[in-house]
Every structure is written in C-alpha cells, then in structure tokens.
Image: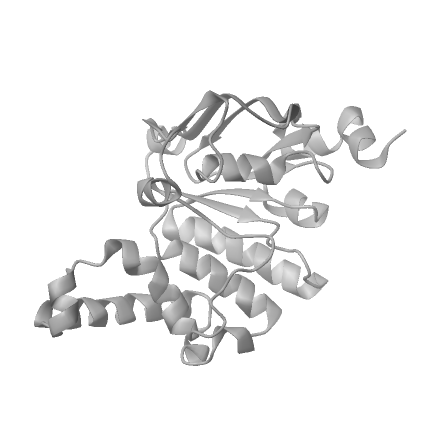
Length: 259
C-alpha cells in the first residue's frame, strides 16, 4: 500500500448527533480514521460509545450529521447495505450461532456474496455446488488464520470464551470489510487471553489490510495497540489524539476517576 493510500481517511464522521426522549446520547461527534489505522473509542460507562457503533452500522439513524466510508455517505442505508458497503462489527456480548458449527458460522458471513440464485438452490444445480465448495474453502482458510481449523466441525457453543471471540472476528472478516468495529473485544478475558487478542488484532489489520475501530475498557490493550484515540464523555468528544497523550490528559483522567 502506498503512502498516499495509507494516509487516506477511510472513515469521516462529521457533527453526528442523536437523542432519545430528549436526552442527547451523542452530540456533535466528529471523527476521522486513516486506512489501516488501529483506532480506539473510549470513555466511561454510558458515554455513548456503543451508540456511535450503532449509528455507524445503521442500527440507528442520526438526527443530524454525515458518515462517509471511503467517500460514500452511509446515512439512511440499512444495516445490510452498510455491511455490503464495507463495515462489519462484533459485539460486547458474543453473538454466535451456538447450534451451528464453527465452519457454518464463518460461512454465514459469505452469504451476502453468494452467487447462486433460488433456482440453483432448489434444484441443487452445479453452480450452487461450486459456490458451496468455494465458500467452504474460504471459510477454512479464515479459520486457519485464527488457529480454529481443528474445531471447524464443533458446535460454536462448545468453544472456549477466547476462541468464541476469535470466531466472531473471523465471521465479521468473511464479509470482506474495509472497516472492522470491535465492541469491547477483551471483555471477560484473562491477562493471557488479552495479550493473545492484542496480537490477533494486529495480525488481522496487517493480513487483511483492514482498518479497525475498537471500543475497550482495558487500558492495557488500548495503550498497547491503538495508534490514536477519541474519548467520549456524556455523548460529546472530550479528547482526540495520539494514544499516550490522550491517556495522560488530566481531563481524561478526571472523567474516568472523578475528582
């Protein structure tokens, strides 16, 4: 990737706002993220972080503001349309299909790109078989990236917690995103699992040339992998900048720890 491509903003958010019942959940939120950047969105509980993710992915429609992904306006698009445009996400509470196998969970991510029609499926025509074989192959390749290939035919619900986190990221990557949103990926992990996750996130960014925006409360993970941060407090941007500068800012420390 050239320096010009590297320095290009993949996501530009301007003056985003939404309120619920008269309460400003997000107010005048702006953000720019560069190609292949590892970016953190942090803040105290209730600051509006997950609301921002829901706005970016089309779960909520903003009252005002603009969201541009690679120059394309996402406001007004459905969740599915935004996913096809190039945003995928994971959730704070893991949302796998526990009664499907590990392999089938990843294949769910390929569904938006399947190239056979209803007639192919009903009559089991060769085109469907070809696409299914390609999907199986791609899914297995993704599982190998996360060292989950040996668990491919296990039910997803039987994986360890750390493995389930990895599987959720693998399924999100199956949609071939430009921007991957991770909502508290280290939640519930011990220190060893968190360290492994940090390495996984860096590896994913580099291997798939994907930009990553994450919400996280684990400051060791945040300081270890995020290049820049935005801090939210009461729905508004408190601070933005280089990670170490932001984390050492007195206003940010006060927002987390109080007076």
